[in-house]
Image (cartoon, rainbow, N blue to C red; front, side, top):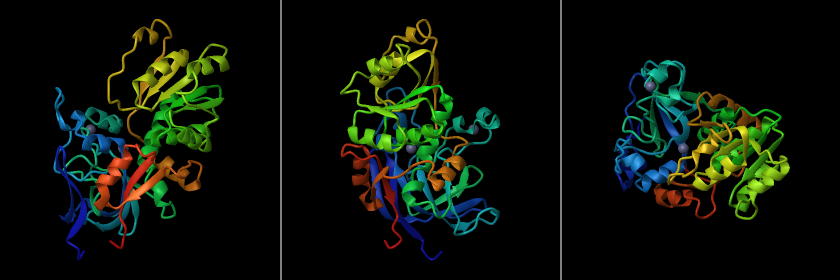
Length: 361
Ligand SMILES: [Zn+2]
Ligand SMILES: [Zn+2]
């Protein structure tokens, strides 16, 4: 390649984010693939990291997790620009994406096939060795990365959702929805919408979506929700009790990240029901735990990342069975990263905000 440097966002430390135009393009080792980034979604976690959360940078008794300097962006994809001498499966021009996790392959979880819970838990977009997609080129170490092909015909606005929607699918799969279930999904942001469009294909008895924003509820309907309610306007627990003869919903999926949504879910779920938690919370949730055992004997499940979900999501997005339309609401050039991150907080009503790389720049 003639080009030696690239544009991108470098993070040197907590609060030290710099847009740079002369970042050296990564060298390609024998087992590496270099891709030209098409762009990267801005995740809520990117914003939290930018705001200096201790779960990333340490403090408050927590050890730092990230390893600066690094280039952020884990919801990315691109076109292969160069391959190392050992690479035979991919060639320049192929369109690929990688899972967020870069499994070590050696820990107990990796050996059991549970790679998404890999003990060292290194991820693209947070580590020096695993720079993310918010720069023009990204080095993919194939010995560590989980790589997936992306069809050329899949529009970029859809392809930018492969990572979050794979997380959505895994979360919904944890809920084991059957046609007899009344399912409630709380939160209709990017992850929630991914859950709604996938869950609706599983044809539950009813799919109910809760969100505090009416425009998101409209989108939820378009994506397959049967009923949508705004908890700031109606008593959603009472509504569920009315429609279930006082029993409650069978499944409650929490992806709003608000402690009140947890308490609400625990109240509206039936005895022996299933509660699935996806969110990352900004504050602790307080709850009388007797409801889990003594009162309802619930199955409370967690969900993290989107293991074994990428091929399915990519295929169904391409056929249109998984909807993606209108989820990416704004795209910015990397030079405007600060505006992009600000919009990604959702304070201006956006759902998914993305950084994209325009060929001409
Ligand atoms: Zn993310
Ligand atoms: Zn591992």
